Amino acid sequence: MNKKYIVRLSDQERRGLEQLSAKGKTVAYGIRHAHILLKADADGPNWTDWRIAEAFSCHARTVEGIRKRFVEQGLDAALNRKKREMPPREKLLDGEKEARLIALSCSKPPKGQARWTLHLLADKMVELKVVESISHETVRQTLKKTN
Image (cartoon, rainbow, N blue to C red):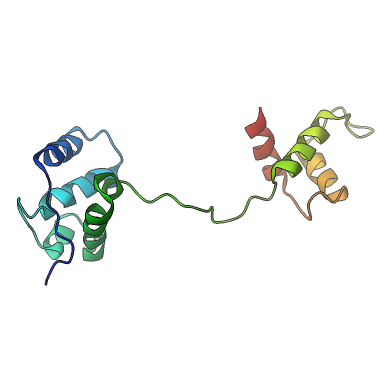
């Protein structure tokens, strides 16, 4: 099998990866990726993707992906996971709606209530047509974030 992405580690990179894996003071996938890069080094052991995958209990495509990220984007990209650009769901409350919620929570509570509860705030936000629907948990997270 021809390797499209050849890993060639400098002495400094190799020492850094060996220290990273020896210390064990990082996330587990980072240590595994360091081991994979060390074994894939063309100037070192130069193991095949299948042998590396078998040794570290992962798929050969994982090894290939780590190789590719190292060659194209560098060592940091190969050791760390890619951050999401967008969250899986859009935020329900934008800045304006958050401001309305905070203002509402600072206002006087409804008659018969000593203070605002999360459920009352959620119901009032829907009643005022700020949002179509909202859970008390979203209200809680938003208010917690602003404290």
